[in-house]
Image (tube, rainbow, N blue to C red; front, side, top):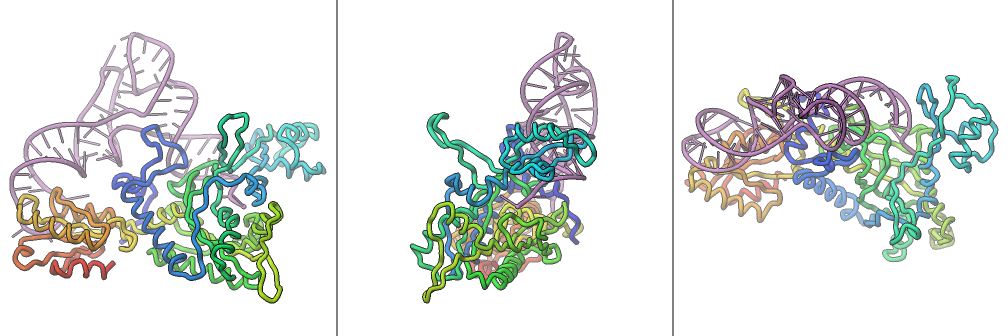
Amino acid sequence: MKKQVTLETIISLSKRRGFIFQGSEIYGGLAGTWDYGPLGVELKNNIKQNWWKTFVTDRPDIYGIDAAIFMNPKTWEASGHVEGFNDPLVEDVKTRKRYRADHLLEEHGVHKADEFSVEEMTSKIKELGLKSPEGNEFGEVKQFNMMLKTRFGASEATAIDVYLRPETAQGIFVNYKNVIDSLHPKLPFGIAQIGKAFRNEITPRDFLFRLREFEQMEIQYFIHPDDQKESYEKWKKSAWKWLVSLGLPEEKMQWHDHAENERAHYAADAADIQFKFPFGFKELHGVHNRTDFDLKAHMEKTGVDLYYSVEGGEKFIPYVIESSVGLDRIILAILCAAYAEDEVNGEERVFLQLSPEIAPVKVAVFPLLKNKEELVEKAREVYENLRKEVSGVMWDDNGNIGKRYRRQDEIGTPFCVTVDFDTLEDNSVTLRDRDSAKQERVSVGDLAHHIKEKL
RNA sequence: GCGGAUAUAGUUUAGUGGUAGAAUAGGUGCUUCCCAAGCAUCAGGCGAGGGUUCGAUUCCCUCUAUCCGCACCA
């Protein structure tokens, strides 16, 4: 009974029920930022914890870190981001199409054009009388930088520019040696991290999809160069499997292998898992073969020895397979996939089919009637006891019973417990299932155990 | 960044050059023996800043945000 859900529906529900709000909303917002509300943060934390458990604590070969967002600016020179993120662009004044100014100049025989300032490029384009493919004049060359910047230092005069990291990966690479020296892992091993990253997107769009501030969860897995193909394939499989385990439907997922010209500057092989969002199939999860690009670059820049030595003499720079996923995008995918409408007793209802493991509220407890003191008292007791056993228990005694069910449906609560008059007689309650709206009778003594089993 | 559209309560919306109604959601009380029932009652709004005007939510300009295309997405 699933209808095609629109992004608007998801945004509206997210706000109404306290999942996600527009950033700085009372000031009119700030493009590219969204805030997580009380339910949203629970959902997010549940996903993070699930990921961390699956890929870090349940595995002997992966180590977690949490690196600073601000990194020595030289990091970004070595990683290629200072160069790769600073594109000088020039516009066709008529069609407004943009071209890489340095590439245009190089094509016309100007050497080392990428070392020119924007002013030099602009005048050189004029001097050569370059025209766009449509035959129009070019405007001024403008520097476009995807990295967000701020200043470190007490006074403006002595302050230095620092970047807000555009990816979390470099925090791992600069700590590679520290992890080796402190934990002494043997290859292959991985380093994992969950953290924020920042990009000055030209057009933040599509709710949580394209953000200026976002959260990544990623693993850099260090291997012997001979193992790159095998490891790459293995990580592709485990990425897919994990997304499915969160409840994402496989029919809405597909692989997209990057052609050579769409790969990042560091990647040899790259593939994305795309998800069918309301605005089309778009990237959700990436698996990249970063080769030895990053470690090599940092080794050259710093002179620090990042070779890995095997007993017996072989010495090499490890290759890296990266498995990286946008946390905000997962949340968007999950909300879109979980949204469902059906009918219960002829009445339409909206419900979120969240997997119980990640649902922000696991179980809600109500008294059947609010004005019968003995019911309320008993329900309170059940609620308090259940809270000790299960996390994510909510109390609700508002309106009538149907209203409460609908409310819980809309936030994806998998189970509702109702204390009624029979409870007072035989100490049993009804346990109602979100997806089927069916209920069963469970004794209070077994309740916590019963629910835990279903979770 | 370009082109087009939009902006009224938490949500969905009506409407006006004399500062706004509704539905629904929400609070409280009553009622209610399992799926948004009923009665009473309360609270809540013209995105921001300028301009024109005696007076602007309404007309004009700028900004901000959102949506749809295009471009961008290392």
